[in-house]
Amino acid sequence: MNTIYFDNNATTCAAPEVVDEMLPMLTEFYGNPSSMYKFAKKAGDRIHEARQRLADILNAMPEEIVFTSCGTESDSTAIWAAIRANPEKRHILTTRVEHSAIKNMGEYLSHNGYKVTYVPVDSRGNLDLDYFYDHLTNDTAIVSIMWANNETGVTFPIEELAQKVKQRGIVFHTDAVQAVGKIPIDMSKNNVDMLSLSGHKLHGPKGVGALYVRKGTKFSPFLIGGHQESGRRGGTENTASIAGLGKAAQLAAVHMEEENTRVRKLRDSLETGLIDRIPCSIINGDTKNRLPNTTNISFEYIEGESILLMMDELGICASSGSACTSGSLEPSHVLRAMGVPFTAAHGSVRFSLSIYNTQEEVDYVIEKLPPVIERLRAMSPFWKGPETECEIKS
Image 1: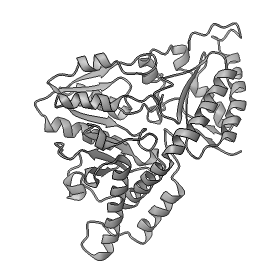
Image 2 (image 1 turned 90 degrees about the horizontal axis):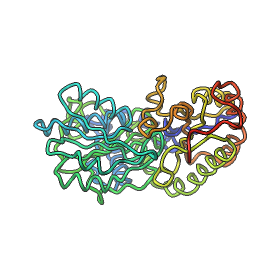
Image 3 (image 1 turned 90 degrees about the vertical axis):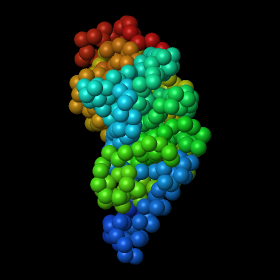
Image 4 (image 1 turned 30 degrees about the vertical axis):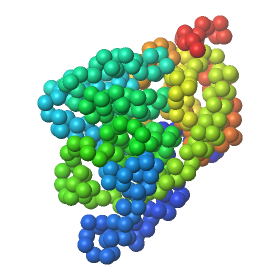
């Protein structure tokens, strides 16, 4: 049985070209890029090349890229940099549907002297913009809004928000971990001050990320150490992974059109096939403003974890939400913020595709999943058969 991998928002496979880019950095060009001799310069050159490739996909300047260990480090760095640069300001504005990297940082800061405001979303996961604008204050140190939600794929109007925030002189950060490589992002045409991304979300390696820092933004390092990254992030560079991230960014730029055509078509085929065949199922989130690879579907009156276990037996990999919150028995905080009923939130499954998926894989899931849902509902005390009234409405 082949594995059908539909969990690319959790992590992606490293592209073969990425692996080829990384291997020489582990075997031939292993010098410390900070060393002075020529042998080490080869490692430094690869970092320079990766920085340029990452700048290219963002239409940014290479010196605006700071390599980190992951998206979470990028997020933490952005938040700390902003509040250290504005020590007199004690307010942070974010949303109720952020990834745990921002959500938990907000909770930490709220217990340490900061006021954190969480912007609500509607039933389709769209931001309450009036609430957002009403809660910007002169005390706001930073606004942090994700570009695309990791569970539903819903995208937010980041350019519009960043422009409004910039007019107030407030730092704007976006967690774009799920967006980079899937939708066009042009830093020359927006007012975002800092942007986080992660290598393993775009067919690069795990353990490497980057933070875009707009030139002129007040900044202080999160990791204090050596002079690496122009003094903005201490620690010997993860040369092989940085080279891999650079190659992944270059490939993502090449494949972005395919991501928004063929992959989008596959995603739509999957969700249409499942919704048509399974009663009391619904797509969570705005179906217009969302990533091309993501669909989040609730199957009412059963547990998502049970669905995942039975799909696993069939070789199908998906998720009930963020991989970073797996193990929690609580339903998704994103779906709860959207007001999804508990009978549906517990039975939600996220499918996230990539350029490596095929129509044959989609057809396999459409064939195998409906009987799984039927079997689980037969064991559910809440399912009364076909006459059961669906609580969730399209």
